Length: 255
Image (cartoon, rainbow, N blue to C red; front, side, top):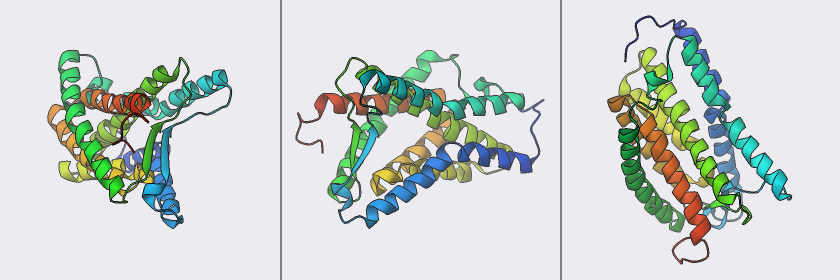
């Protein structure tokens, strides 16, 4: 990536910038997830007899629920806007992290392949962890059966893909590279953070998401693009949310 002409702040301020971005987004989520896991471990029930709900109703009234769902999704993307602003302030463009539409076919193809491989493996890992008592029962959604249910689930999936891959993958790895971190050290930190904010689901979710973070980090370093990972993450979550809505109570293997 071309660094000529960048107006980067001193390393001390870059570290504060990274801390501020994470404190306002997925770093705070990691702390809350750890505390939630501690609470689950202290409960009288085993992990497999507790639930972790991903997308649930926010109000009794369906129209108010819809408004709150859309507001939560929009507000959750605020850290992405912050990251794009900080990059722009340093003379960097979204294309510098591979967040553009210059390679739509390749990005979608790569993302679809990653989603198929990682999504399938992740489901098997979750089922194994659940039956071993290392994971809570993950409930992807329990929204009411109204007309906006599937659109909101798809928007939630896109929110997760955009937020995580822009902040914890592309932005973090770029800034750590500018601070002189080695590639593997940066990728491992990103992967551990990714696993940490999934701890509320149990140990299996931490391991699975950390492994995904390593794969995504290596590929981002190789391709210089986060768009394929945004596509992959969105597809994985979309299939999980919509698939659960369609199959829950109809198949025996789904907890």
